[in-house]
Length: 157
Image (cartoon, rainbow, N blue to C red):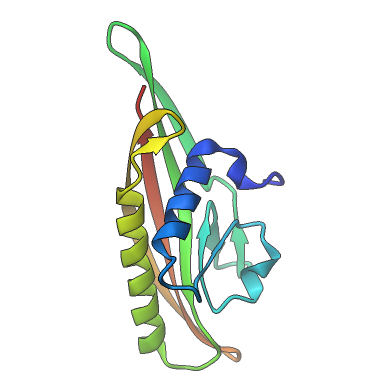
């Protein structure tokens, strides 16, 4: 995806909620997957991207999927968007316990932040963290912990 992912109002609302939720953790960057800062941040959350272990890079392929359904006699539309995200912690050392604790704290703040999302634009919304996968990385540059997770947002008419 070449355009910034924040062009989607739903993705922008999630990014804003996560940024606000992580305000008490100023050392955690909230990033778009196309950001060149990906390689420089020791603690981050990427919204709208997933980690590709084969290439060792962020990927935005199928990272945002939106389904639109019609409901009721008035044929109102309900938009459900699934947004892949990544939380990362790794600062060059080899202490995985510290990185796991950092990622856990980040995910707790993100979970609380997305649960508080009540609107996208003028429409009511409901958001939640719906899936998680964790991985640990150890290489010549140190260690790190990655949590790939999904945020699902339902925008109601």
